[in-house]
Image 1 (cartoon, rainbow over the protein chains, first blue to last red):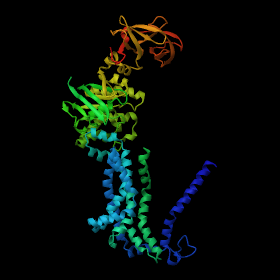
Image 2: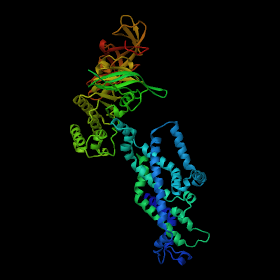
Image 3: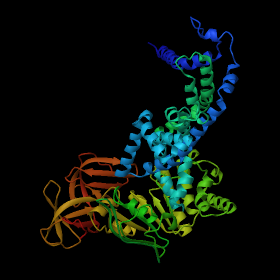
Image 4: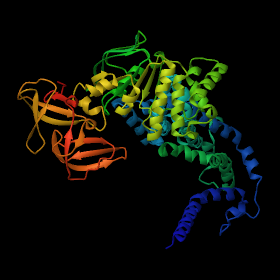
Length: 275
Length: 355
């Protein structure tokens, strides 16, 4: 088997796997555009005969998607802001100090990530009810998401900090700066890429978060898009095209952002590893 | 000469590990001091303690008469050149040079002027707007030096600054650093594991081993009168030959190289019958025809660099001889070894101290 043939074969396999993986996404877009009868036709059509573009503004209006998307954005931004501020500090300390307590801390941080949201939600719900945080449902969700996603952020950003040589900080100290000053002017700018990439990943995660939002937010006008989408579903659901239109409006901005930033995200994630 | 830097009774523990043991050292204003020793001897720890990057666990350090033991690095007013140069990768050369000035609140105009002046003296004028990654090793080294001299600090600290350069550039930078020191009239402390750097650059060499100062003094004093076997072996290249010997009557000692006892005259008195170590530097031995030297030995092998020839003898212990010029001896030849009585160093066999 020659080298080029093998490469082509691997490429074909990769394309096939990608096609299988991305098929649901494709199905979402074309189902949204199909008419009611085309949707249920057998055999199914793989391209809509008469694309119903008007479904997007229609569903957006009907379901008040502006509200849902706004809530998703508020929750995601709030979580990212909280995680970035607290997580960056924690990651720096865990990267720079080595002793038994730091190891314990790191272990606990990693343990947090193991616990699934569906398990955590009951104690969180009880705690938030008792403390009254549940009266501010979006804040409650932000806190819950921050607790859930912080470990992931800390682990990624810690690796970034560890790739910044200690000597640079020491040079800044000898040059007359304080530890805090050295952190802001030397370490943070050098770790910026890693922090940004981790924050973007957290944002995407939080934008699609469902379990906490569903459980903690009762009021429809405070719910994010993920819960709004779920509200469509029922035992007798048959308006698939509207659900798919909702889903398309919901995920397309995230997909677009990811495609635009993917080069930076990949390089940001590997920069620490390769240097 | 007034004292610029003083270590008194400095100790440093890392947990149970005792890295610096009761260091007393005073460094005169304007002098160039080299801290030299094998890796792990504590020389870098001593330098980092002086900079404030390590907290000492006992004793005091003072700079220019002020006790700085508990002060953070930024209040000590010293500049340091790191082995890796530690240039800030996200800043241009100019920003690197002026970082300390910016931290100290110097105005932008003044900073630019200072950077231009320093760059002119160190040949960096054309590189001010480059980033460190766009520079060669030698240029980075220059930026690191310039970043130190722009501030006019109380002392310059160098932590093996030349070890990442190639051999030719290293020899060149040695001279340049020393010239810079003389021009600025600065006080410099220079850490190196390379005794040649220490010997050629410093006014005062401090030899450390296992957290202890083994000997300090002018470079040639260390070479001529090493205080113990360790310093004798560390200073000078190739290393001094050591021969175990037994003291005999009349200031003599007998050595045994595997072919029966040989009598040598030693320059000092020692108890008869005690065991000593005879040290002779390779460059102080000359080759003669067999029978014309102090004793004869067969040649094991020779290495020639063109200007000098290194000859090893097939004796136990092996002897190294450095001959200038191209004396042609072949492996297995019997040669005579000659040396002056004054070239013989004698160390106590047990304590390894100079007698």
